Image (cartoon, rainbow, N blue to C red):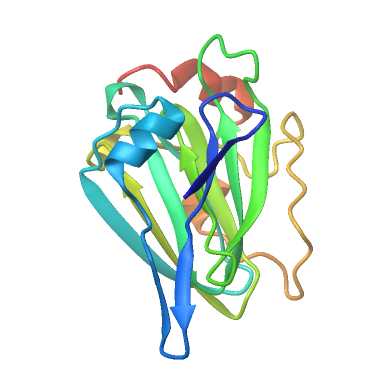
Length: 187
């Protein structure tokens, strides 16, 4: 696997190596010893999640607060998404900065997102299957959402015919200044 740190410390793009022939392909999507050596990050994933969404669905930008915070390793196994991570780490020189990239079944790229980041994605294909590992169990009382369209962040979401499909919960989200105040605080 190839590991490339983005311009935000601790946020890594991971490119698995595919081995293919006329039958299909094989690839490792995660290997702890290699991951730890390449990134210097000690992580123990405890839960795997998967979602299926249709074109225009925008999920996020979600985060878990305080000691319930989650690091994530995300990828797409069917379709295409624009994946976005926003740094909310207290005292970070890149606080409020975002990183966006296309994840797809075709490119097989993955993104490792450290704790205290908000994360979300928008589906670009007809449907997409989004998979991710987390290093902390989901805690509903610690869940929070950062505004996907906060002008202080300025995420360049693509235009989608028919508009975005966003849950009421995600529309009732916090601006950056409030999210940054509570991200490290237990609920």
